[in-house]
Length: 429
Image (cartoon, rainbow, N blue to C red):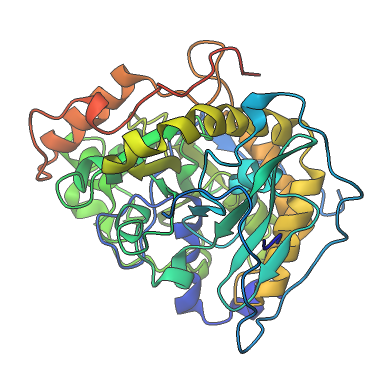
């Protein structure tokens, strides 16, 4: 059983346009898009310290080695098998093996809960951009492997909700709630857990050039140009609600920092709370100062991003697996936020081994974890539980998306796209 450099000197600025996809896919187009973040309050980010599926088989035969062995990195194997102390942590014979999860971008700390589950016997397939290893629940080996697949360029920039229908081996995929709403007719998905409580996406501006701007609504009143990716849900919603005006929107953003820097902060731009403040202050030497921002979430579009989702039709067959796996994921969310070093090391190792244009140094991984906690991107919902989804919040998003003119079934209910059935309400921060 298989147990498995700043971005290359901007690599190509056009390629950097893909970075925003990293933290969530809010686009309505399967071709390279990024989701919006639901977020914290307007913030001038402090400078970070640069130092700081087939039927399950409990005993599958070894897979034959491929003709051309992909480049891999292997960590030392665990010394000895952990004794199963709780049947609820045993996934062998209950879940697909390997349990395959399709993410939305290269490995990054926003995916930390997943990498928290990867055992020390992990291997990285550089060609396919997969990280595989024993699926661990804390110190307990669950008896199956986990395979975490990179998204974005690795899958032709397809959305999670569409790609899960292309590859039957995928058990769960990252799907943002707006994506699930808009694509429900063509590729219906069911979200079973939300590792992130708030979407990391932001609109940023230069606080020196615009000291009176505190919110996205202030940007609207000031008439600043807002440079964004084309096709993003949040822009249509904000224009429909009058937060921004259509003549402010420039949908030519390619993810690169060049225009924002060249114009000296004369414009506003989309970004991510868990990456942009660090990059603009530390990485982009031509800027090298704080940015200010507001989370899309705090501006009124409270999307759950990067939810773990299945094909809706698989709900019954995967129910026994999800009953055990979802609480394991919930605990991993808490464990990663508490002690992220090991999982972050795997994430950094994976990015280095894949060796593409995406660069993810340890300092950025550390910044991301702190930003997730500081801005409430990770945490409990309105109750004491992590990972569950508030249906009233989802109903509000459905209504906003319909009002913005998207082709959505007007009778859609939150229960059509999410379920808290498998959530353990005792697990939280």
